[in-house]
Image (cartoon, rainbow, N blue to C red; front, side, top):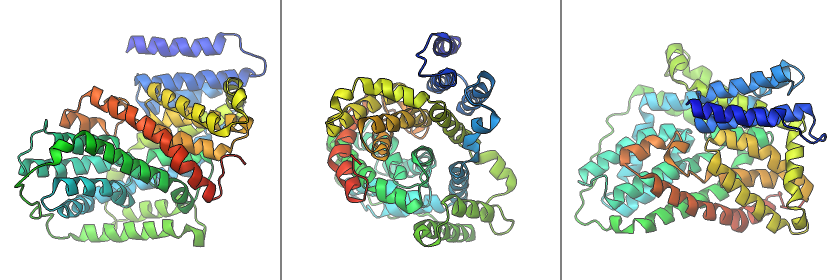
Length: 457
């Protein structure tokens, strides 16, 4: 830990004290040094990630990266932070009510006795269950136990190819179903806050196609890698995995979830920010005799770390932009890409490759998004590209990659339980890097052009 802290301090002091171009300015230099410090702390996990984010906010104020405390707390004033708080509460309540496990069991029972159909059902559930259980980590924590029951029933050991395929897909592909929805957890919430203010429907229109394609293609890659494991014969059905009788708490939770989803789906009609339905759900869930949770449950289990990571990430990214650091960083980056200014596809390819490389050294998704999106969007403007398209490409490439088990809190416990080696996770990430860049060019860019967001404005 001491060595990691020393490296973080060295990076911070080097950026803070070394001479920088006058075009950067002192506030920009401070913002750049603070963001670099926080990203290194997030990567090394020296402190809890929420503590590292708060430290960055304080340093912005104390060292002059922002004019006063108000801009430093920018992220805490943004609705996306409270939107996340609402959906975390919704997910916790769905799990506590038993509704989430019931939905997972019903999906799995539809597979009958076919290993291949079981796998297809699982991929489908990554997207379908997101509407009721947005968090990929919570979804995985519930689903892993249900799938383990299936493997036990079929007498399949952990080392079997079928078990490895199921668990590897659950660890590496599960979150792709989440990011297609604005209510899908940390990644879409942070990204939407950095890209601009999105409605639920607009985010779904822009991001569902590329992320669902990624989910399908990634699922095919895992299937082909472990196809021998799907050739089982004489396996027993799983129709008798009984979720039990429907409880009143599940009925109430289903009503709350469907009402919230309906408000999100119809935002084009009522114009409410997605945070409003999420906070309505939060209030109902905490109501005595109506909701699922007591205030003590909410205080203890809602995952406050995510709230502080979101808010501080938005604050740090805002400081990069407002201080001019993002513009300076992007102009430095574009200096090496200016020969591609008249070749937008080639410029985007170079940027996408750099996104994949940055993701390798910044495993924390909030840190990656906070660092890369402001810089990439500023660089896009200098290159004559649509900043929103480039910013969305940052999300598509970065969220497709889990290079090593510890890089994802939603996956690490699944890899550990299934005894998936780090080398296996890394090989899939390399394949997904190629797939993600291919999806950006072959699917996302043409599709975004169709829905009104061309690569070149």
